[in-house]
Length: 146
Image (cartoon, rainbow, N blue to C red; front, top):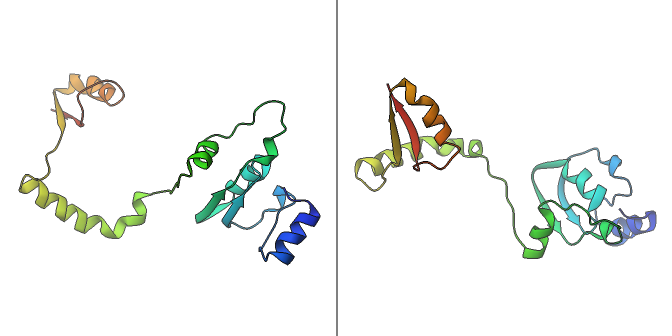
């Protein structure tokens, strides 16, 4: 977290909208976050992210002098690999469902798309079909034919 002097420098000199000195002060959803600190500040901001927020990870100085190594979760590999992470929810693309279904049906009809299925026969095969979803089974959709 920034000291009061650092916060004034960031907002008054560099023009940032906000520099946090207390993570509990976050009241609004955060749309953009440049994090060179990590620790409690990182956790507090991530908990308040707005939909489609943008984050830039620069470092984790909050934990550099800790006796025990801090827990970074997935953040440290993202930083070191300069990776980009984006959330994806299928519901965001609902407008594309009907055209996608139509195209997939055409692809099934003309053989460009081949279903991968494992067929189980009889109600007694249901537990095995269900267990196959979580174990080493033949790939594809597990179907129980009654």
